[in-house]
Length: 211
Image (tube, rainbow, N blue to C red; front, side, top):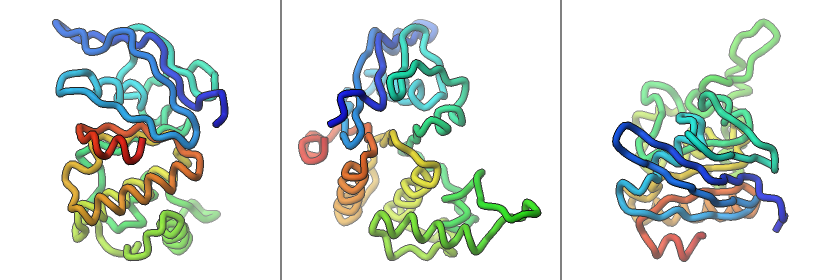
C-alpha cells in the first residue's frame, strides 16, 4: 500500500447553531482501501461526507488530497479532484436514459458542440462492462430500473468523472440480498483498481467483509 494517503483529513470540526456536529475528526484513506465509517444517528457522518464532497466547509481543520491541502467551495470542485459521493437518495433523472444520467453535465461533444450520442452510449457501455455490469441497456430510461440497478448507474456515473475517492452512504439500506452481493463485487473491483472507498454502514457484517 502506498504510504501517502489519497485522502487525509485532520482536526476537522463543524458547528451549526446550537450543535457541535464534528469535533477534531481525523482519518486517512489510501488507494485501494475500503475505509468504514460507523456511528449512530446524529454522530456527524452526514456532515463529514458533505465536508469531504464540498457541500459544507469545515470551521477548522485541513483536507489533503495526494498530500496537498485543498479547500472546496462547492461539490464540482471536489469532483474535479476525484471525489464522488453516492447518497442514500440517488440523484438520477428518471425520465432520462442510463447513458444520459451517467454523463449528465459532461456529455462528450462533437466539433460543433453537439452531444455525441453514439460516443456517449459507447463509453457508458464501456464503464458498465468494466464493473462487470452487462444487464443494463444504456438506452433504457432510469425510471424503469430497480433500486439496485439505479445504484449501479450512480457508480458508473462516478467513474465517468474519474472518481478516485468514492463515498458510499448506507449503500445497502434499500437493496435486495442479490443486489447487496452485486454491490460487494463492485466494491471489491473498485478496491482492486486503486479506488479509495469510504463505506458508511450500520451493519457490522458488511464492514468486516469489505473494510
